[in-house]
Length: 434
Image (cartoon, rainbow, N blue to C red; front, side):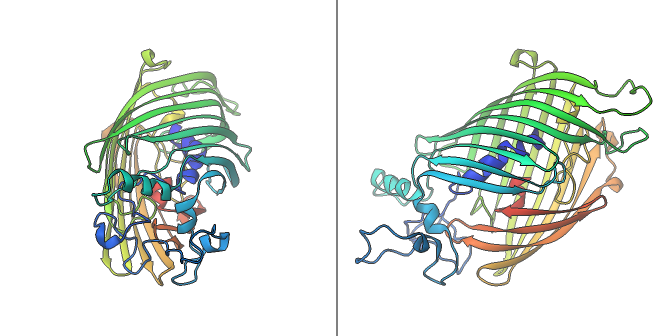
């Protein structure tokens, strides 16, 4: 459940901030000619891949907000020029529709330590004889908070620092949260007269992470430290004694762990990819020496890929696997992660989630998409997996191509599962947010 909490609070703040200038491994250079930069793959064949140059009459004038938000090529709304020149304080916001916590919102303020345009100019001055194939993002600092309909709330701050020409990336954050959630038991079967019980988590989460790029490749290796301290309280509310296997009804749990990870990323955009793949492997070891009350491990192995098999069709495929062992707190168990299924609905010692998504670019700006996936849970052992007991979800959505330089599409998804209906406001790939 730590992943669930991070998604609802800390990652939603970080993602909203990074959405303006993220750490792409193949980000198109807004100042370069794409024909001279083969590694900077345009988001779409007929998309504009650089902001229009200023005329000699206006080169010395500061562009208006309208100039930064309208693409001169087609006259449509496009934030590419705004993102390339943004620097300093910037307000951020978003809408939460996650079924696990109900409707809500997130507000915050982030500080961009430099603009993407300035970073490009600095790199060209530093390496005047080299083609600019990859653009280091600026460092970002942010603060924000969220509140939802079921009175879940929290706030936090983060800092992402890029140094040594994007050779190293640091990410740190601290989040306080007071969450109201539901526990459905392992495998979604509580084995009680009710199908779920409500519980609260009140505490904080700390992350310290450092990543290193291997040579000039698309591979990152890194390590992180994670610590969470939560007061947990389960509202049992039944006229029977809790079973022996049931978690403590009220307890303070400290979880501290050291993690290692490796990531390979060839996506042409980390926002809404049209081609490439992303592979990540991570293991976190929670031990007493790291400040944990319990000894347990959590690991993941995720692979996502995108294939453009037509000028207007892009197929995305993903498989996410999560493993855990030891005395893991119930709220940190892996969970099935699909649009249309509440993040707390199906948890177990092991989970596998597979999903396919097909996007049809109807016009240069507007797209339609459909998606379908299935998730499986093993309660305690790998042998508990049964592929006939998968949990299915699917739906459709639409996107608007809001930045053709950075490959950002935004829109909505509508998803159904055997349990519920949900809708989501999405910027970039939905898999980046899940």
